[in-house]
Length: 165
Length: 173
Ligand SMILES: [Zn+2]
Image (cartoon, rainbow over all chains, first blue to last red):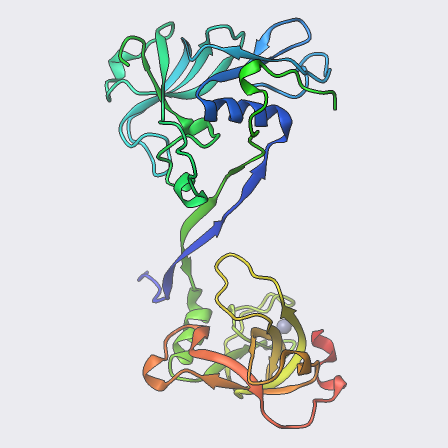
Protein backbone atom coordinates (compact mmCIF):
# COMPACT_ATOMS: atom_id res chain seq x y z
CA UNK A 1 0.00 0.00 0.00
CA UNK A 2 1.24 3.44 -0.89
CA UNK A 3 1.97 5.91 1.90
CA UNK A 4 -1.19 7.95 2.59
CA UNK A 5 -0.96 11.53 1.36
CA UNK A 6 -1.39 13.43 4.62
CA UNK A 7 -0.17 16.73 5.99
CA UNK A 8 2.60 16.64 8.58
CA UNK A 9 3.82 19.63 10.57
CA UNK A 10 6.59 20.07 13.13
CA UNK A 11 5.24 20.96 16.57
CA UNK A 12 6.81 22.02 19.83
CA UNK A 13 5.27 21.96 23.25
CA UNK A 14 7.19 23.90 25.86
CA UNK A 15 6.62 24.72 29.53
CA UNK A 16 8.83 27.29 31.29
CA UNK A 17 8.43 25.64 34.71
CA UNK A 18 10.10 26.97 37.83
CA UNK A 19 9.95 24.61 40.75
CA UNK A 20 10.11 25.53 44.39
CA UNK A 21 12.57 23.56 46.48
CA UNK A 22 11.56 23.62 50.11
CA UNK A 23 14.25 24.42 52.71
CA UNK A 24 16.22 21.14 52.53
CA UNK A 25 16.80 20.93 48.77
CA UNK A 26 17.08 24.74 48.91
CA UNK A 27 20.08 24.35 51.24
CA UNK A 28 21.64 21.77 48.90
CA UNK A 29 21.22 24.10 45.89
CA UNK A 30 22.43 27.13 47.87
CA UNK A 31 25.60 25.21 48.72
CA UNK A 32 26.08 24.29 45.04
CA UNK A 33 25.75 27.96 44.12
CA UNK A 34 28.45 28.73 46.73
CA UNK A 35 30.66 25.95 45.32
CA UNK A 36 30.41 23.17 47.89
CA UNK A 37 28.24 20.16 48.71
CA UNK A 38 26.06 19.29 51.67
CA UNK A 39 24.07 16.34 52.91
CA UNK A 40 21.80 15.72 55.87
CA UNK A 41 22.29 13.58 58.98
CA UNK A 42 19.86 10.68 59.16
CA UNK A 43 18.36 9.35 62.43
CA UNK A 44 21.23 6.87 62.83
CA UNK A 45 23.90 9.52 62.12
CA UNK A 46 24.63 8.56 58.53
CA UNK A 47 25.01 11.36 55.97
CA UNK A 48 22.61 11.33 53.03
CA UNK A 49 23.59 13.25 49.87
CA UNK A 50 21.62 14.90 48.32
CA UNK A 51 19.79 15.70 51.55
CA UNK A 52 16.27 14.34 52.05
CA UNK A 53 13.55 15.86 54.22
CA UNK A 54 12.61 12.66 56.04
CA UNK A 55 14.58 9.66 57.25
CA UNK A 56 14.16 6.81 54.74
CA UNK A 57 13.77 4.22 57.56
CA UNK A 58 12.14 6.01 60.49
CA UNK A 59 10.34 8.79 58.55
CA UNK A 60 11.60 11.30 61.17
CA UNK A 61 11.96 14.88 59.93
CA UNK A 62 15.70 15.49 59.45
CA UNK A 63 17.27 18.83 60.35
CA UNK A 64 21.09 18.74 60.46
CA UNK A 65 22.68 19.87 57.19
CA UNK A 66 26.38 18.95 57.05
CA UNK A 67 29.15 19.70 54.60
CA UNK A 68 30.70 16.87 52.57
CA UNK A 69 33.64 16.76 50.17
CA UNK A 70 33.51 17.48 46.45
CA UNK A 71 35.48 14.34 45.63
CA UNK A 72 34.58 10.72 46.12
CA UNK A 73 34.39 7.21 44.76
CA UNK A 74 32.47 5.82 41.79
CA UNK A 75 30.22 3.02 43.06
CA UNK A 76 28.43 2.26 39.78
CA UNK A 77 28.40 3.71 36.27
CA UNK A 78 26.82 3.43 32.85
CA UNK A 79 28.56 4.56 29.66
CA UNK A 80 26.71 6.92 27.30
CA UNK A 81 28.34 6.46 23.88
CA UNK A 82 25.98 8.77 22.01
CA UNK A 83 24.77 11.65 24.22
CA UNK A 84 21.31 13.01 23.51
CA UNK A 85 20.26 16.66 23.30
CA UNK A 86 19.80 18.08 26.78
CA UNK A 87 22.18 15.68 28.51
CA UNK A 88 24.90 17.32 30.61
CA UNK A 89 27.78 16.68 28.16
CA UNK A 90 27.89 16.63 24.36
CA UNK A 91 30.67 14.04 24.17
CA UNK A 92 30.64 10.41 25.35
CA UNK A 93 30.51 10.26 29.15
CA UNK A 94 29.39 8.08 32.05
CA UNK A 95 26.41 8.51 34.31
CA UNK A 96 27.81 7.48 37.68
CA UNK A 97 26.82 7.02 41.29
CA UNK A 98 29.46 8.83 43.34
CA UNK A 99 29.91 8.41 47.09
CA UNK A 100 31.36 11.72 48.19
CA UNK A 101 33.91 11.94 50.99
CA UNK A 102 31.97 12.19 54.24
CA UNK A 103 28.77 10.80 52.73
CA UNK A 104 27.18 7.41 53.33
CA UNK A 105 25.07 7.36 50.17
CA UNK A 106 25.99 7.82 46.52
CA UNK A 107 24.78 10.68 44.34
CA UNK A 108 24.03 10.55 40.62
CA UNK A 109 26.16 12.76 38.37
CA UNK A 110 28.28 12.46 35.25
CA UNK A 111 31.96 11.59 34.82
CA UNK A 112 33.97 12.98 31.91
CA UNK A 113 36.94 10.83 30.95
CA UNK A 114 37.59 12.73 27.72
CA UNK A 115 35.41 10.24 25.85
CA UNK A 116 37.41 7.15 26.89
CA UNK A 117 35.15 4.34 28.14
CA UNK A 118 38.18 2.40 29.37
CA UNK A 119 39.10 5.22 31.77
CA UNK A 120 36.20 4.70 34.16
CA UNK A 121 35.93 1.94 36.74
CA UNK A 122 33.99 1.17 39.89
CA UNK A 123 36.05 2.30 42.87
CA UNK A 124 37.92 5.05 41.03
CA UNK A 125 38.33 8.48 42.66
CA UNK A 126 36.69 11.47 40.98
CA UNK A 127 36.46 15.16 41.78
CA UNK A 128 33.88 17.82 40.89
CA UNK A 129 34.66 20.30 38.11
CA UNK A 130 32.78 23.45 39.08
CA UNK A 131 31.38 26.17 36.90
CA UNK A 132 32.61 29.72 37.74
CA UNK A 133 30.74 31.63 40.48
CA UNK A 134 27.68 33.72 39.71
CA UNK A 135 28.81 37.26 38.76
CA UNK A 136 27.47 40.05 40.97
CA UNK A 137 24.34 41.55 39.39
CA UNK A 138 23.75 38.63 36.98
CA UNK A 139 20.26 38.72 35.46
CA UNK A 140 17.82 35.84 35.09
CA UNK A 141 18.77 35.72 31.38
CA UNK A 142 22.44 35.45 32.35
CA UNK A 143 21.55 32.63 34.73
CA UNK A 144 19.70 30.76 31.96
CA UNK A 145 22.84 30.56 29.82
CA UNK A 146 24.34 27.90 32.10
CA UNK A 147 27.68 29.71 32.03
CA UNK A 148 27.97 30.12 35.80
CA UNK A 149 26.66 28.70 39.07
CA UNK A 150 23.05 29.49 39.88
CA UNK A 151 21.98 26.91 42.47
CA UNK A 152 21.59 23.85 40.26
CA UNK A 153 22.94 20.30 40.17
CA UNK A 154 24.56 21.41 36.88
CA UNK A 155 26.67 23.94 38.80
CA UNK A 156 28.99 20.96 38.83
CA UNK A 157 29.83 20.59 35.14
CA UNK A 158 30.91 17.01 35.66
CA UNK A 159 33.23 14.88 37.77
CA UNK A 160 36.67 14.02 36.42
CA UNK A 161 39.26 11.42 37.47
CA UNK A 162 41.00 12.80 40.58
CA UNK A 163 44.22 14.63 39.79
CA UNK A 164 42.97 15.85 36.43
CA UNK A 165 41.75 19.24 37.64
CA UNK B 1 8.59 21.52 60.11
CA UNK B 2 11.47 21.74 62.59
CA UNK B 3 14.13 24.43 62.09
CA UNK B 4 17.09 23.36 59.95
CA UNK B 5 20.60 23.47 61.40
CA UNK B 6 22.83 24.94 58.68
CA UNK B 7 26.62 24.81 58.48
CA UNK B 8 28.26 28.22 59.01
CA UNK B 9 28.94 28.75 55.30
CA UNK B 10 25.20 28.57 54.55
CA UNK B 11 24.15 30.99 57.27
CA UNK B 12 23.29 34.62 56.56
CA UNK B 13 23.24 34.27 52.77
CA UNK B 14 20.30 34.32 50.38
CA UNK B 15 18.87 30.83 50.12
CA UNK B 16 17.89 29.22 46.84
CA UNK B 17 14.11 28.74 46.89
CA UNK B 18 13.36 27.68 43.33
CA UNK B 19 15.03 26.60 40.11
CA UNK B 20 14.25 26.63 36.41
CA UNK B 21 12.98 23.29 35.13
CA UNK B 22 11.78 23.97 31.58
CA UNK B 23 10.22 21.08 29.70
CA UNK B 24 10.17 20.91 25.91
CA UNK B 25 8.97 18.31 23.45
CA UNK B 26 9.60 18.56 19.71
CA UNK B 27 7.37 16.28 17.70
CA UNK B 28 5.60 15.85 14.37
CA UNK B 29 1.88 16.31 14.10
CA UNK B 30 0.35 14.05 11.44
CA UNK B 31 -3.06 15.35 10.42
CA UNK B 32 -4.53 12.06 9.14
CA UNK B 33 -6.62 11.65 5.98
CA UNK B 34 -9.81 13.45 7.07
CA UNK B 35 -8.15 16.46 8.69
CA UNK B 36 -5.73 16.72 5.75
CA UNK B 37 -8.72 17.07 3.40
CA UNK B 38 -10.17 19.71 5.74
CA UNK B 39 -6.93 21.70 5.89
CA UNK B 40 -6.41 21.54 2.11
CA UNK B 41 -9.93 22.93 1.69
CA UNK B 42 -9.09 25.73 4.16
CA UNK B 43 -6.15 26.63 1.90
CA UNK B 44 -8.81 27.13 -0.82
CA UNK B 45 -10.89 29.30 1.53
CA UNK B 46 -13.51 26.56 2.06
CA UNK B 47 -14.75 24.92 5.27
CA UNK B 48 -15.60 21.25 4.78
CA UNK B 49 -17.01 18.92 7.43
CA UNK B 50 -18.04 15.27 7.30
CA UNK B 51 -21.49 13.82 8.05
CA UNK B 52 -22.10 10.63 10.04
CA UNK B 53 -24.30 8.20 8.03
CA UNK B 54 -26.02 7.02 11.23
CA UNK B 55 -26.67 10.06 13.46
CA UNK B 56 -26.37 12.64 10.62
CA UNK B 57 -24.12 14.87 12.73
CA UNK B 58 -21.62 16.98 10.80
CA UNK B 59 -18.15 17.11 12.32
CA UNK B 60 -15.64 19.90 11.73
CA UNK B 61 -12.70 19.55 11.60
CA UNK B 62 -13.48 15.95 10.64
CA UNK B 63 -11.46 13.08 12.10
CA UNK B 64 -12.81 10.48 9.69
CA UNK B 65 -15.18 8.67 12.06
CA UNK B 66 -18.16 9.39 14.30
CA UNK B 67 -17.12 9.12 17.97
CA UNK B 68 -20.67 8.14 18.95
CA UNK B 69 -21.40 5.52 16.30
CA UNK B 70 -17.89 4.39 15.46
CA UNK B 71 -18.52 4.44 11.72
CA UNK B 72 -16.55 6.23 8.96
CA UNK B 73 -17.84 9.67 8.03
CA UNK B 74 -17.37 9.70 4.27
CA UNK B 75 -19.89 12.29 3.09
CA UNK B 76 -18.31 15.72 2.83
CA UNK B 77 -20.37 18.80 3.60
CA UNK B 78 -19.47 22.34 2.61
CA UNK B 79 -20.11 24.67 5.54
CA UNK B 80 -20.99 28.35 5.78
CA UNK B 81 -18.37 30.85 6.90
CA UNK B 82 -20.78 32.09 9.55
CA UNK B 83 -21.88 30.61 12.84
CA UNK B 84 -23.03 31.13 16.41
CA UNK B 85 -20.97 31.76 19.54
CA UNK B 86 -21.92 28.91 21.91
CA UNK B 87 -19.52 29.71 24.76
CA UNK B 88 -16.57 32.05 25.14
CA UNK B 89 -13.76 33.07 27.42
CA UNK B 90 -12.34 36.56 28.05
CA UNK B 91 -8.60 36.09 28.42
CA UNK B 92 -7.12 38.55 30.94
CA UNK B 93 -3.95 36.74 31.88
CA UNK B 94 -0.66 37.02 30.04
CA UNK B 95 0.94 33.63 29.49
CA UNK B 96 4.12 32.31 27.95
CA UNK B 97 4.04 32.28 24.15
CA UNK B 98 0.87 34.38 23.96
CA UNK B 99 0.82 37.04 21.24
CA UNK B 100 -2.65 38.65 21.59
CA UNK B 101 -3.23 42.02 23.22
CA UNK B 102 -5.24 41.67 26.47
CA UNK B 103 -8.08 41.31 27.06
CA UNK B 104 -9.23 39.24 24.11
CA UNK B 105 -11.99 36.71 23.49
CA UNK B 106 -11.58 33.08 22.57
CA UNK B 107 -14.88 31.42 21.65
CA UNK B 108 -16.46 28.19 20.54
CA UNK B 109 -18.28 28.86 17.27
CA UNK B 110 -20.90 26.51 15.84
CA UNK B 111 -20.59 26.93 12.07
CA UNK B 112 -23.93 26.88 10.27
CA UNK B 113 -24.55 23.37 9.00
CA UNK B 114 -22.27 21.68 11.55
CA UNK B 115 -22.90 19.91 14.87
CA UNK B 116 -19.71 20.61 16.76
CA UNK B 117 -18.14 24.01 17.48
CA UNK B 118 -14.63 25.09 16.51
CA UNK B 119 -12.49 27.33 18.68
CA UNK B 120 -11.43 30.71 17.33
CA UNK B 121 -10.94 34.38 18.21
CA UNK B 122 -13.66 37.03 18.23
CA UNK B 123 -12.53 40.53 17.19
CA UNK B 124 -13.91 43.87 15.93
CA UNK B 125 -16.21 44.04 18.96
CA UNK B 126 -15.48 45.14 22.56
CA UNK B 127 -14.68 42.05 24.62
CA UNK B 128 -17.50 42.78 27.09
CA UNK B 129 -20.12 42.72 24.33
CA UNK B 130 -19.39 39.16 23.20
CA UNK B 131 -22.22 36.84 24.30
CA UNK B 132 -23.72 33.41 23.80
CA UNK B 133 -25.86 33.21 20.67
CA UNK B 134 -23.97 36.05 18.94
CA UNK B 135 -23.85 35.58 15.17
CA UNK B 136 -20.37 35.85 13.69
CA UNK B 137 -18.55 35.44 10.37
CA UNK B 138 -15.03 34.42 9.44
CA UNK B 139 -12.48 37.04 8.42
CA UNK B 140 -9.91 35.38 6.19
CA UNK B 141 -6.30 36.36 5.55
CA UNK B 142 -5.59 37.76 2.06
CA UNK B 143 -5.85 35.07 -0.66
CA UNK B 144 -2.09 34.95 -1.24
CA UNK B 145 -1.58 34.11 2.46
CA UNK B 146 -4.04 31.20 2.59
CA UNK B 147 -2.55 27.93 3.76
CA UNK B 148 -3.57 24.55 5.19
CA UNK B 149 -4.03 25.95 8.70
CA UNK B 150 -6.87 27.45 10.75
CA UNK B 151 -4.71 30.57 10.93
CA UNK B 152 -6.03 31.20 7.41
CA UNK B 153 -9.00 32.58 9.32
CA UNK B 154 -7.71 35.67 11.14
CA UNK B 155 -10.70 35.76 13.51
CA UNK B 156 -14.49 35.89 13.56
CA UNK B 157 -16.48 39.14 13.89
CA UNK B 158 -20.16 39.94 14.46
CA UNK B 159 -22.06 39.68 11.16
CA UNK B 160 -24.96 41.92 12.24
CA UNK B 161 -27.63 39.21 12.33
CA UNK B 162 -29.93 38.98 15.36
CA UNK B 163 -28.85 36.52 18.03
CA UNK B 164 -29.44 32.85 17.33
CA UNK B 165 -32.25 31.02 19.11
CA UNK B 166 -31.08 29.07 22.16
CA UNK B 167 -32.73 25.98 20.62
CA UNK B 168 -30.29 26.12 17.68
CA UNK B 169 -27.15 25.69 19.80
CA UNK B 170 -28.29 24.33 23.17
CA UNK B 171 -26.85 20.90 22.38
CA UNK B 172 -23.39 22.44 22.05
CA UNK B 173 -22.88 24.17 25.38
ZN1 LIG C 1 -22.84 9.28 14.34
